Image (cartoon, rainbow, N blue to C red; front, side, top):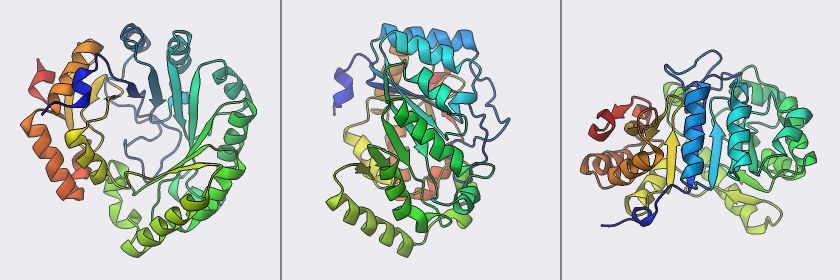
Length: 318
């Protein structure tokens, strides 16, 4: 059966993980990022700028730069400013620890669609439990710097057993900081979170109360959008069977994943052009082995823990 993306000549969105390196050791991290934990074979500046050129040449309108922590990548500004000068709209996903007023002013010179900052607690104690080494005060200051520089702010909240009780307070905090969107949903069982699952997974009762609170706030909230659908990864995967997202998920070494909760790699941007990677991605969603793997992941969420045990599809091994 044809998909909507089959008619598109290029992705509408590229989510580009620039590094696995980070300045925090977050317990819920889905990319296995941590200080000094670069992925083997991360792209150098020349390779990264080659991908930038390809993104621009294919008229991709929207790119998210994330990690790890993108702001610690030595060539972050070369990537961001090259994309921005070509008119590509940008989303920057950051923990906010390095985003001060000077960084915000420099970012504000680019076509920023949004800056997304994680607030996983509303007290230093709770935030520090989930994000060891992190400062909630710095994250709040980063949010204020973003708004003072005139950029749109998104807040993300990853619920765990450690912080789910702070969810309502974080929503109110996000509003007070001027966020236009609040993103959340069930904790993803990938990476570090998968290894610490027994410690982090909220109970069903906690999730029920969390979802009821979100529904209640969403019915009356007008100043800030609450985004929590799909609520879990299985729901998102199920939608992909008939309507895969027009997105390429690029890993720090240039590999392209089929989907975040799946281990399949469909292309390698060190070797493949963006157009070839886009074709490989579209073909992957017609591949029986990929669809079967997605079906298994929908039925058994514990399989999401295998998402970072990468499997190269035959087309990616050529």
